[in-house]
Length: 550
Image 1 (cartoon, rainbow, N blue to C red):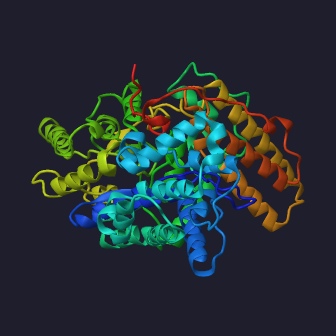
Image 2 (image 1 turned 90 degrees about the vertical axis):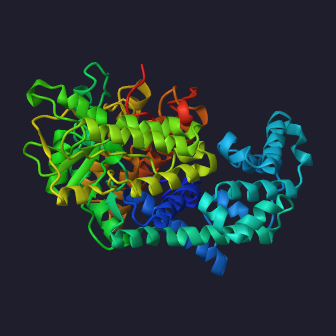
Image 3 (image 1 turned 90 degrees about the horizontal axis):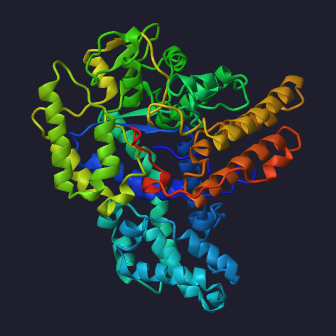
C-alpha cells in the first residue's frame, strides 16, 4: 500500500484526495477478503508516509464529527459543508473533482450517477450554463462520488450505504454526514484490522523507506546505467549525501511502522522494488531478513557471466557479501492480474492463474516460491465490483488447494526454503528491471537537477547551524517528501496531462516550501511548469507492467 505525501506540509491542506479514497475502496476491501478466508496468507506492505496520512485523516474526520473541527481536504470538506458554493467556477471545480473515477466500472455502473456525469460533461462545454446549476445537483454529485468509491465489502454489508445508493437522488446534508461517518469508521479501523491479522500470523506486514525514495538512485545515479547503458543522466553527478538520506528514510520508516504496529518488521519492500548491490548491503545492515524486487531484475542479473549456470527463477536469492534474502516478482503472473484478468470472468481468471501455478509445480524441481506482487490499490478499479468476485474466489481456492500453499516471505525463510547464491546484481526496479520510470528522460532528469539544487542548499544551511532544532526537523521532513519517487514517475509527456500537471505542481510546491523553511528564496524556475503530459498509457499510467512491451 503506497500513496505519496499529498499534503502541503506548511498549510496542512491535502492537495489530492487519493489517500482517503483508496482507504475506503481498496485497503478495507483487501483486509476484508483476508478476514473472510482465515486460512489465506499474504504479505502486506505499507509506506510509512501513507500510514501517517491515514492517521491524520482519521484524526481530522473524527474531530469534525465530534467537535466540528474543519477538515483540510477540500473535497472531503465539501461533502459535509452545509452551504454549496455559489460561485459557478467553484461549483465546476467540485464537479470536475467528482469526475475522477473509472468510467466503465465506477461511474457507468450506477445509471443515476452516470446521468449526472453526462450532464457534467455537457457543462464543461457549455460553461455559461453553470449559472443555472442548482445546489442539489452539486450535493448529489458529491454524495454519489463518495458512494461509488466505497469498497465492495462496505456496499454489501453496511445498511447505511445500501440505503443511500438505493435513494439515488435528493441527498441532504444529513445523508452526506452519514457518508462521512462511514468514512470515519474505515479510516479509524483499517490499520488495526491489518494489525490484528498480523498478530494471528495470517498476514506479514512489511515496510518501505519513509517517503518512498528510489534508494539506488539516491546512493548512485550512475546505477541507472547497469540496466540502461545509454540512458542520458541529469547534470547532477551524484545526489549529495545520498547514503545518509537512505539511512534516514529507513530509520524514520521503521520508527513510524513500530509506532503504529508495535513491532519491527522483518521485511522491507524497497520503493518500487528498486535494488542494487549497495542497497541490499544497507538493508542487511539494518537487520532486515528479506527484501523483494521485480523479475526482470533477476533475469538481467542471471544473464551476467559472473552468475554462471542459471537456476530456476522461483527462489529467493542472496547476493554475496550481503545478509538479506531477495525474493523476485513473477512478472508474468502478476501482470496477468494487473492488466488482463479484469477483462475475464472471475472464475475463469482464478482457474487460469491456478493452472499456471500447477504447471510451475510440475515442471520445476524442488521447493518453489512464486512471488505475486501487486499494487494494493490501482488494479481493482478496472475489475467488476472492485475485484470482489476475483479476490474472493482467489483466496478461497488457493487456501483450499491440496498442492499450493499460501505463505509469507518470513515463513519461507523460517522453513529453510532453498536460497540461491547470486554473485552480482544488475541494479533496477520492478518496472522493466530498469529505472527508466524515474530517470533518463529529459523532464525526469530536470526534476533530479532541481532536487539536487535544493539538497545543496539544505546542506549549506545546515552546515552553518542557523536553524533551530525544530526548524531543522521540519526542513528534514520536507526534504524527505521531495525525495519521494512519485513525482518522477509522472514527469514526461507519455503520461496523462492532468496527472502530470497535478504531480509536477506539488513537486514544485514541495521544493519551494523547503527553500522557505531553510530561510532561502526559492529559485525563480520553481514558478514555472517544466513538464507536460499528453499520453494515454494503459490503466491511466498509475500502473506499469513488470516487463516492457515491445
